[in-house]
Image 1 (cartoon, rainbow, N blue to C red):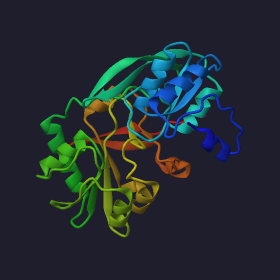
Image 2: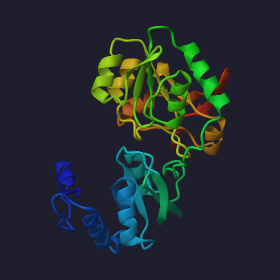
Image 3: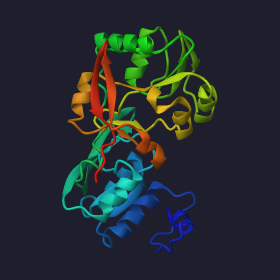
Length: 293
């Protein structure tokens, strides 16, 4: 529940709830209830399931903010990265009601609302499910990618229904939730892990294809930890391609695309704008990782 990590960081924490081993959702609910009357802002680390536990515990009695831990999250109660959580906690002036959403039986379900700081550039939006990409757009994106890749070069496809649809255009079946590696007309590795992926791309010519999470804009750091900083450096950021339907880009409402690799120096190395491939010979120049001064 955080005591060990806090002590390891040199802090002397006050333990308000003695959790079981291992801790459970009931421990999260109990600890949040104890803290609700003692704090001005309740910070928690976890994903959508933890957000549900916090909602059950505190409702709208105290503002909250989630610290993201790397999983793909549907709820709109999380900062865009841990550093942003600290920046928001240090000072905010307004609150808003934010959705708590979790997947149940494979589909997102709204469980309620938590009050969170209203800092749009630092607190993520709710994930918007895919409405599908038109066959014409998918075919165009697939053709554009093929024109960028030379024979013998590897193509690393990030997770997503868009990237899976692109692979299908090439006659390949890959899982939508994994990272997959393609060489020409064959799948070299499906649902590959970080270590195997690093081995495949090290010393090889490779490209990485990513599609942003709908409504949130995350390219890296949410549900694709296989694309580690080591893998990204081995491939080179100049060989990273972003693909999306025009509708997905419009749904961002001008908010920037985001990366959260866990490596601050690598995050800063990304360009301020990236080209988003939306079809054959069709690209949009879009802001990436907009920072506040």
